[in-house]
Amino acid sequence: MTNYNKSCPVCSGPDQLIPFQWGNYPVIHCNKCGLDYCSQMVEKERGGDSSPVHLEGIEMMANAFHKTNALAKKYTEKRLAIYESILNRKCQDVLEVGCGPGVFYKPWQSANVSWTGIDINPYWKEFGQQNQIPISNYPIDSIKDQYDVIMAYQVIEHVEDPVSFMKGIIARLKPGGIVHLELPNQNALTSKLRRISSQFSYDYGFIQPPMHLRAFRKKTICRLFKDFNLESKLVLTCGNTDKIWGQVRDYNLLQKSLYRLAGMFGLGSLLIGVAQKGDSID
Ligand SMILES: [Zn+2]
Image (cartoon, rainbow, N blue to C red):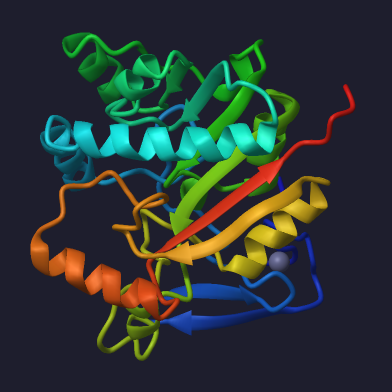
């Protein structure tokens, strides 16, 4: 097992690690790729190498499911157009890793694109059965097929080893296929406020033990794409309510205005990375 006290989980760099104490837990900042992380995972998702999603978040997503359908449809139409302009062909199938309630299933189906959703949490498989959404509970390693697009929304920040996670994704992309990551932005306004002092904030930005133990910046995502010879198509930050890249959540008006404002100043809470695999068949 890798000792993350000595090497960064993203760039493996041993030379620019800056360890420090935040309240009662140690954090490491990698100056080379900009990742903030905790070297030890306190708690893990059953059957996975990732930190858990708290119950509150699960219940919120389940409750918002019916309200967020229309939003997911809008996003899907806009994203499909962008994916196809990058693919330069029709998008036939997508894989969503860590799909939660599967709110994107119906929108993709209406767009005549085959959607496969997997989530390590068995809660969602059952939720899918109750709502006629085919959610599977197996890990990405057991998938034999390849896809035009693989998306992972709010997943990579939970993963202990982002490099092997990316390997798993890239192996399942068709030549010229696209990976789309959505994750918290460690340079967001909310994150900056939570990094002022450990007296005011238990969280170090988006390091939120035991849930999130990896916090990425734009620089980190660029580095990750580069290391895998992926062509970066888009690496940007935006507000949670962004019209194309926003999150499928049921926000109130105040939240919406705040997110829009932060997004306008480039301090939005979402970090988006879209990259393309080379055309050669490997
Ligand atoms: Zn690093």
